[in-house]
Structures are given as C-alpha cells and as structure tokens.
Image 1 (cartoon, one colour):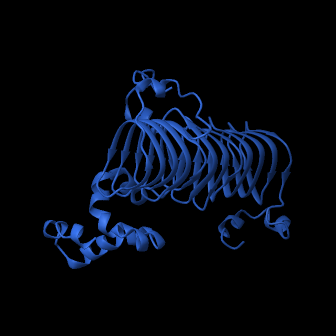
Image 2 (cartoon, rainbow over the protein chains, first blue to last red):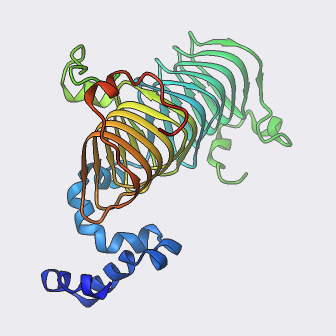
Image 3 (cartoon, rainbow over the protein chains, first blue to last red):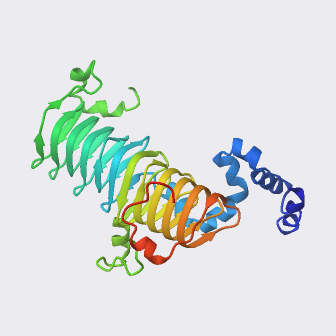
Length: 185
Length: 136
C-alpha cells in the first residue's frame, strides 16, 4: 500500500492531512466500515466540485425540493422530509412536508404532508394539515385536513374531514393560524 | 430501446423544455418502486427499485439499489445493482457494485467499482425492452 502511495505524494503534497485522508480512503477495510459522506468528501472535494457543477449548485441555490417532472412516472412510494413538487404521474403513496401537485400531474394513492397544494389529479386520499385545492384540481377521494381552501372550479368527489391530528381537530379547523404549528405534532 | 438515433427531435432544444423533462429527487427523498421517464432524472436521495430514463445522473449523496436502464448514465454516488446503458460515466466519488452492461464506459480515477463491466454491441440496447431476470 505504501509503495503505491509514494509516487502520489510529490504530485499532491500540499498538506499531510490530505495524503493521510487519501490513504484512509484507499484502504478498503477501514474505509468500508466508516465511509461517511463527510469522511469521504475531504480528499475528493476538489474533483467533485469541478466534475459536478449541477450537484453543488443545486443544494445551495435552491432548497432541496424534489421535482418529479412530467416525463417521469413512479410506481411505488415516495418519502421525503422535504418538499416535493409533482408534475408527473405517481402510482403510490407520497409523503412530504410541502407537497405540490401540478396541474398536469396525476397521483393514485395517498398524499400525506403538512401542506398539500393540489392543481392536478389525485385519486385516493389527501391527509394534510393544510390543503389547498386550486381551480384545476381534480380530487377523487377523501380529504383529511385541519385547514382547507377550495378555489372555484375545483372538483371533489369525496369527503372533507377536519380530522387531521384527530383529538382537537375540530376546534383547530376554523383557525387559519393552525398552519403555523407545523412542528408541534 | 435506446438506439442512437432516438433523440428528442420533437421537443425544442431550449432550456425550458429541458427543465420540464428533468426530474430532481432531492437528498431527503426515498423512493421504493419503479421510475420511468422519457427525460433526465437526477437522483440525490435513496432509490430502491428500477429506474429507466433517457439520461440518469446519480448525485454524490445518493444511494441507489436496483437496475438502471438508460441511454446515458453518470454516477457520482453509491449504486448497487445492474446498469444497462450505452454511455456510462463513473466519476471519482462513485461507489458501484454489480454489473455494468455498456457500449462506452468512462471510469474516473478514484472510483470504487466492484463488479463486471461487460461490453455489448449497439443492437443489444435496441432490443432491451425488458431486462433479463437472471443475471446473464
């Protein structure tokens, strides 16, 4: 191992720490056990930033919203602790924080979230603290919510139940301020 | 399926059109199931299942387990499974386990690759309507 390390050192001997880190990452046994992103990123960082401009700009430029474009169809479940924007087609359940279903999107399944904005089609169920149905929304199924806004022109075939959060949902439902308490649950 | 002449001739080549067809799966997103796209898919989160698209980019933070079918694939993160693509690029941060069926492949210095990389002629990818269930 050290023999192979040697020719590398003169080329990239900016710092000792770098070569030590490189050695650690090249050692398969030790690197395999604790290869975390932070550990791994150090020696590779300059390469990665050059080779992958869109990856580095994406997390910083925009908050890491996931976008399901209209060209994408997903069969299965989606789970995220961040926002999801759906413009494509999904057969399965979606879990997110702020879930936006675009006007050409179609979801067959349950959409869970703190806030769900629907401008497309959902066949299934919506369970969210705050639900917004835009004028182009087509909702076939129940809506479980705490706070709902329905624009003129929206289609709903199902029940709207102010049961989200179950216990004190009825008292919280009329208050629009209930949206603020997203993390309370 | 992914013949070379198959390109997006119907779509204008402007940036808007490209963005519309590009999906981003963020770092916090986990998908279990199947992804099918005609456009580009960028994955920074976790995917368990099959992905097929025109172009796939696995970001440095991703973990993908399953099969990928595409015309073009670029890997910067972790992948385990099978790749079927005309053009495959592994960047230095890639960690790959499995089989890579390719026509052209690029492997950057530093990429961790554990598996076989069988070359296939172009017509293999043309007729790739459904994946071989057993590993050939």
